[in-house]
Image 1 (cartoon, rainbow, N blue to C red):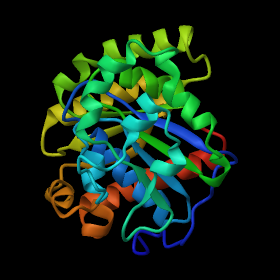
Image 2 (cartoon, one colour):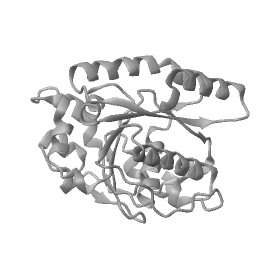
Image 3 (cartoon, rainbow, N blue to C red):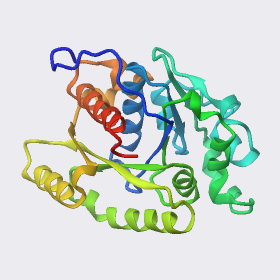
Image 4 (cartoon, rainbow, N blue to C red):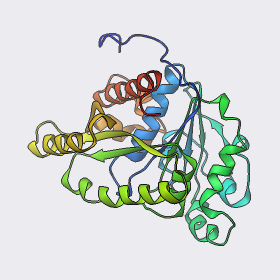
Length: 276
């Protein structure tokens, strides 16, 4: 980072806690990887960050070395049993200022159990309301690859949507459906929600298609798209198998540097009021 001219130890903190859902119903576009590495980057530069793993697969929990055994308490207990977020958040090893509310396999049944509960779409929002978010600068919600009740809960609870888009043609196909769902939730359940950030992931500069997809997304969404392109990186893929984000696994890799730059953009956009 110092070589690239960004050797500052701390980045600006937002005036109030930013609650950001990382959402895209297409699988394999880098949602979890993006949520985990942006959160780790911001925490490493002086921000206080909480990651809420809302995906039953629990990949974010694995990448942050969380206990996912059957006995451990998770976000499921918050949604279904009204447990407090404060009691569920665990500190992430090796990264100061970073906490995670893990997901366990119990969450797979939460979609069905939520159906019969009162105000089922706003269970997560109510949990955040009971939490003193002044102690945090960012909350990242890692959504499942679907548009079900868990994702709706995330959208109702957040103020911003961050969409990772893979630089391939199929990634654009499902984007329209996601945008329609965002508009539905915005008009009926959460008028304050906005799409604030789009991250282009798995970029392969050797292919013309990747450049075309990037240009098309930038042409449609303009300044919402971060300048930083996240390339395909072996290190990014390897890191979760060691229970780490790529920021601690190999901070000098191309993927780590790209996510650090992307997080820096997000932090400085907040400082000048963009994305709020």
